[in-house]
Image (tube, rainbow, N blue to C red; front, side, top):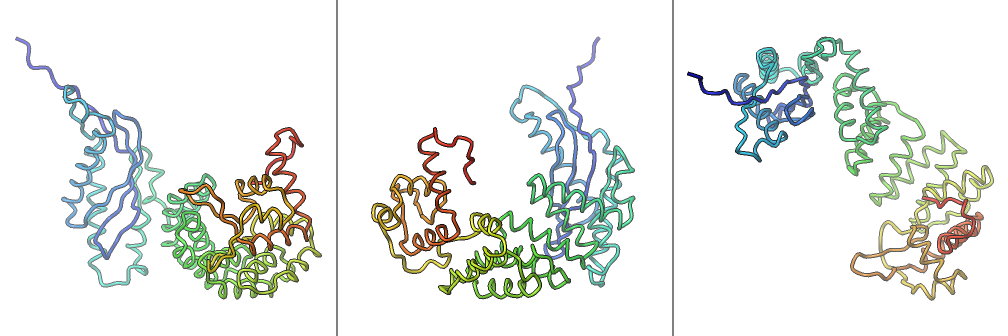
Length: 379
């Protein structure tokens, strides 16, 4: 007599596990991990409440199987009685359990964690179960630092700033006195829109001795968009003591003076006299004619703006659509909101530094579609 047929089984293979963060305050261990399952190959992350090592390891594998089941779409088909299990659980359970126990023991010590070598080791640990030579835990701190920095810069070049920031935080655990690490963390958070964290990181980089041009500019830029013009002014003023003829610094300082209602044209004239082409390029890229601080506006209709600036209305509309003039639009209203003073400043600067004709020509080209087709629109 034939016996009962076995249910078909789905295999999960755990490839690697890496510590992302140990949160002492909330007693949480954050792990990232890679694995294969019937649904494919995945990289994921999980938060383990820190309790005891056995419970933590069991929690990890339970959540891993649950996620793999969902990703393999097994939950959507009750007709398929598929039992998922971790094929290499015997080989991976003990390292993960031991890791959890080490975390518990380290957090129970009275040492300062940022000075505790075991804690630093744990925060930058990782196991690769298919290729042990790739395990972070088998490498020295210096080699781990190089790995994190290489991974972070690669991810930044691809635009994956959240992942890059995670690797940079690990690098920072290994080398907390490196200004370049703090700056790179700041850049990631700047790109993610976390201006408060970016500000903290750029300030720390400078406190650690970073005096590079871009660090001054990043710091000033964040203060600018936080509408702290006085602090932005101080930073660029200090930068120009070290880099006296830096065009970008002069243009951005002029922009701050404009925002503060101060005379800014002399600074632009100085920059233009030093390098006309670079000044024009920088004006196009960075000068903000909209008043960041808000305040009372001198609203003007587009028909009146056309007469005031001697620019056709259709051209102004085209410039507004491509964000080339200071204009505001609202989702529930197609009407453009224009400020007379902002438009006057824009037209004055663009005429003075020979930018206006090109802008109008590009706008007219886009409208007509058959004029100077080889001229690319500015982004």
